[in-house]
Length: 304
Image (cartoon, rainbow, N blue to C red; front, top):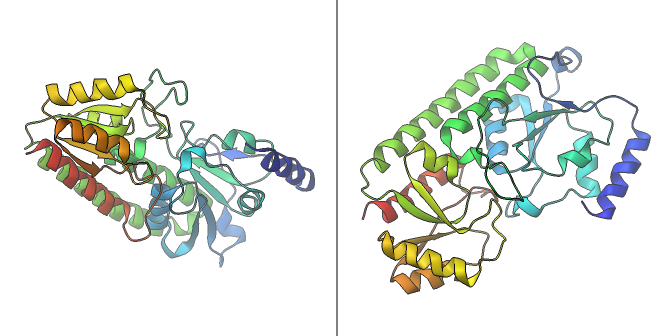
């Protein structure tokens, strides 16, 4: 976190009365929002795009949802500004992915506030890896089954804060979970018809997705963050791997330089397609539509 943000944290902490930062725990009672604010919407801030959509779908017209990391901004390197910190102070709920994805949350601990932080990774079994930057893979939202649990965690938090509207949130939750279950079934059925199982992603974002659907992920960037630079040896290894496994589609992402993927594709006589990690958000395409686009591109690489 830069010095400006750290200074802002100290300044805010001084002027806000002492209380406690609450990280969501279903075993702990939470002050009822509805009892004191019956006619007001819950103000929820979500860290990045998938959580923004999940919260909007569950909260409906009872929750005012905003996105902390703007559309088009890559979240791995994002740090909150003074304005962002002040905005978070005024929220009732902050929804995060967890698993170290929002590393700025640790610095936020120094602010005394009543805001409830919902860690949507609660009760999700995650994978350990050997990557220093993220020893645990945070990309749970790319697995629709894990995304269901994230939606459930958001719904549980809203029901605890606003029990008066519990049935409303439950109906919305069930409706969206049904869409995720249909997405899961569609991916499962369509990928099961593909003979190939190996694919090359840009960075190591699709481990949970690959595990769910019996695929094998190989990555140009062996990192949970997309901005690392591949070495010439990495590129050579990926090119040889693609040739040995008869891979002719190399995947890239929306927010990265496509030239690396293009160099590999040229060497193997292949093509480049986008496999989106859904990190930067898209105002014109929702989560399920984006996942269906990923499925279409994966089928081009695995079913031909």
